[in-house]
Amino acid sequence: MAPVVVENPQSLKTWIGREVAVTDWMTIEQGRIEKFAEATEDRQWIHLDRERAQKESPYGTTIAHGFLTLSLVSHLLKQAIEIRGVRMAINYGLNRVRFPAAVPSGGRVRARVALQKLEELPKGVEATFGITIECEGAKKPCCVAEWIIRFYS
Image 1: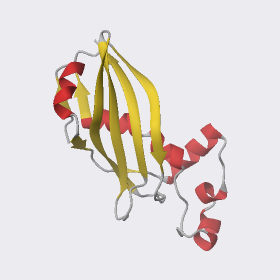
Image 2: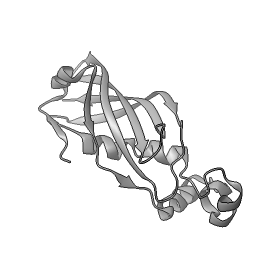
Image 3: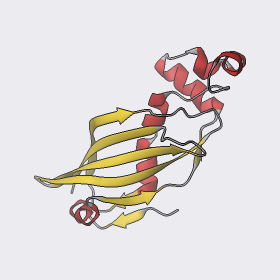
């Protein structure tokens, strides 16, 4: 799916309160989970030990780290929207983050992106996006976050 194209950061105002896009599905392979565990020093067995996870975990398999899922929001937002005329974009932070469901190894995720709020800044805007990451076949989303990005022209 091609991203929604917005001509400049100020043009985002037409999307306030609306869903901008839904991204394509992305598979979360065990290899990615293992690399994330190494990068973050989070080697808990529910992420890495397939045999134990099969026997002891309520998921029946290894699962992705919640923070791995969250770390994909930048990639997924780029799939959802292309904002032209941006000289610089700054990750300003997160207001809320929740992980209502797990992402099993081999699971497929996608994001629903909505623009919740837009505030004018000198030479730019501050956008608050509602990001809902869904896991294929799950009843609940695997990550729900409010992400603030500052776009400068």
